[in-house]
Image 1: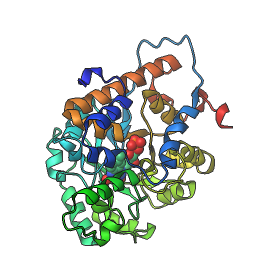
Image 2: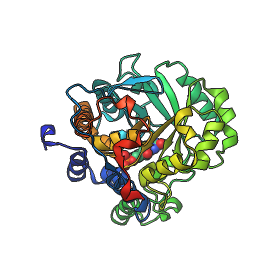
Image 3: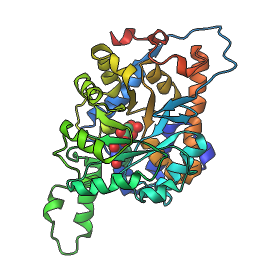
Image 4: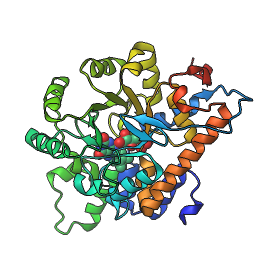
Length: 365
Ligand code: FNR
């Protein structure tokens, strides 16, 4: 369908599901096992309700924000997602330039389909970028990668993903590979890896070091001068550890339901942090991702204390339309955010961070 007919982020996922390749859709859409955490991410956003204020002159509003030193038109980053070329030939190049045109930041993945140097050419040289790191079992490879990134001052932070010590079982992805083998294998042999039903995710993610631990933070510190953000925090106790170890921020995330199935929805985790370690919101930048699909979700996340939100799958799907698709998706979110703010009586997004008075949490109690 023409881009102009896509009017919300769900439309991007639906269009990609219908017109993208079956394999790319399975990889993108897939989540772990019974999709419990995937569904919890989405349902939590609809459990949080607003407490709108009225009659406040909402003619002029401000959605601008700063995330890890990056100045953005709204507090949104495009989540790191592997092999974006599966969704369209421009892959991460579209994500970078679409993000820059809309004034938000793209976080590139370690498992991107282009090199970091190539992806950075998609934005002006000073435009902010984030980099997502999977630590390699061969630590020298990670050290070399971090040292290459030092050359780029516009990479504002390294997001170290820690919630995927092993790649989980994504059945939508795996079934497709298994069925392809059944129908296309010429010699009738199924290899050892294939017996596990290795989908695209498992085959690209098997380099990740499962020995990674908190005691490796000083090692990472020695190999990069950039702020470290721990992506995949799912409890107050780990949020506190990240703070104690001097991290600049955390992303409250369950990997979009693609890691441990049965992990809580990320809004629930944010509420645990508010209750058990409220100090983290003041002393580092707390981000959240998972199921964010509407501008109103962004406003709710900010009121809950988040510095910003990450949006994943809809952007990967938007790559089907190239950079215009990515920009269009971002502008839809921007428009929804502005509408939600006006209807809620919020004129300056920066002033309502952590302000629960705009939320009606009765449903949660
Ligand atoms: C991911 N995610 C991810 N995370 C990461 O740290 N490194 C990666 O390479 C990837 N790859 C990846 C690929 C695809 C296709 C998806 C959908 C997700 C997780 C991602 O960064 C983020 O945490 C979730 O996608 C957020 O949830 P939503 O917005 O997709 O619901």
